[in-house]
Image (cartoon, rainbow, N blue to C red; front, side):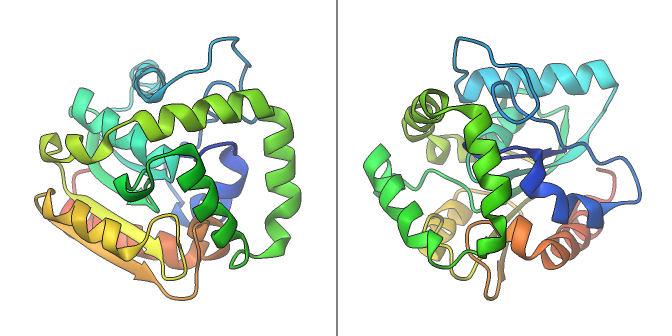
Amino acid sequence: MLLHGLAVSHRYLMPTARRLGPGSVYVPDLPGFGMSGKPAVVADVGAHAATVAALMDTLGIGRAAVLGNSFGGQIAAELAVRRPDLVGALILVGPTTDPVAATAWGQTRRLLRDLVHEDVRQVPILARDIREAGIRRIRITLRHAVADDIYGKLPAIHVPTMLLRGSRDPIAPRSWLDRMAVRLAGVSVVTVDGAAHNVVTTAGAETAAAVRRFVRSRAPAA
């Protein structure tokens, strides 16, 4: 189960998703984003986690490896706390929100720094996703993201966890992942050289390979 980040959709996750096959790989669009419906109420982290749990229940998915990128990592972490029966392994890729920059402006400033390291070929996909989500939804979701205390939830996560980031990612710096790792049991920390925040897009092969190695070695039943 792959969960996308703020303002985007399943589309930018596909370079990683395709390489995780063959097998059952689910890449849903969260409510309000991509090809999903656009509810008037903008969901927070808890509401998105409840939606993912309901989807997994409906599809009859037992315990899955759940990968969340950026804001999707916050949702994945919430899901692991609320419904540990659904999460066999947790992969947080470039997870937000680092408490050092837990404001809308702090995250925006880091995003601007990240843009200079991203591949410009992502622009058409990201522009489409932003247009479909709308500025109002993105702005409110950002407020939900910075209000969510993922750091405080980490000790309640009791499944094998991998933290992964691109070496050039200023949104999820190594110092943040190191602080997260201290609070997680059985954690693995992986860095993909040369990639930035959207490592799932620009380094799909490397990301998928790291995920496969982790799931096979640490959570063979996931």
